[in-house]
Structure formats: structure tokens, C-alpha cells
Image (tube, rainbow, N blue to C red):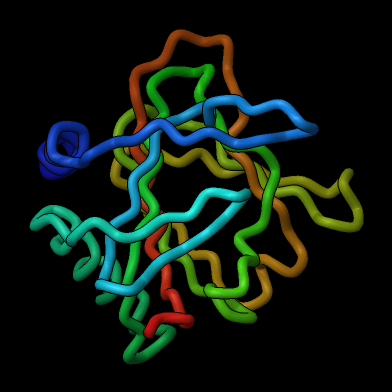
Length: 180
């Protein structure tokens, strides 16, 4: 019920946007909707998309505080200053293989990922040995922490599925270190 309440808050209160990306000279809509929220100045760029933060909503602050309490057991004093939200509307919305290794995230970023809604497969693939893979089902209300050298050695993705599935919202809380 708490997860359902937060899912509805995010679905209805977040100003979702449809960004576009250019791959091999062709511009296409990202296969999901996104939003970027955070502290003033916590701007972020990936794949040619430049994001400037919208203010924190009460629901985002609530989620942020809950996961910081967990993360601070391993990383004392860590305070997320931004969050990338992804809305996967159906099984055709996806995220291709990538690592979160943009310069503004620092050398060993700590990323706290929270999921609401439909369960989706989250897959890891080793960057050198692509046959080495693992999968984590991200369920409603789940929390996944990526830290230390994860981004150096692993790519991750949310693959498409042909199954008819309900929407999913994923929040990836981050620390932008290149803020004014």
C-alpha cells in the first residue's frame, strides 16, 4: 500500500518528458519517459541529453530519506543530491546496455535504485567477458545499491519483453559532484 501510494504520486505528480537520442545518425525517442530532480545546480548529461533539475517533490524527499538511512550504514554521511526517474510504460519500453560512468558522477559512483510497479528484469553483463551475466528481478518497492567499482566492470540494462505488462517507475538516486 505504501508502494502503491508512492507509485501513484510519481506517476501523477512528476513532469515526465520524452527525450530523443541520436544513434548512428538517426534521432529516435528514448524508449521510456524520464524526469530529473535534485538540488539546484545538480545538472547531468548522458548520451547527448542535458538535464537541469526540477525541484524535489515531497514524495521524492520521502523516498530519498528512507534509502539514505540504509545507504549510510555502508557510506556514512552520503547525501544524494539528484534522482533520474524512468517511466517504463509497457514491455516495449527499455534501457539498453550501459554503465553510469559520466564524469559528474565521480570515479566510483554510489547509485541507489528504487522500483515501483511491474517487476522487470535488471541484467548485468561483464564489460570484458560478455558471456558473464546475471539477472535481478526488480519488484515493486525493491531497492538495489550499485557502488564501488560496479560501473568499471559491469554494464546493465532493462530488456524489452513481449509480455503484456503494467507500467514501472524506477528512480536512480545519485550524487553529482560537479555542482557549483
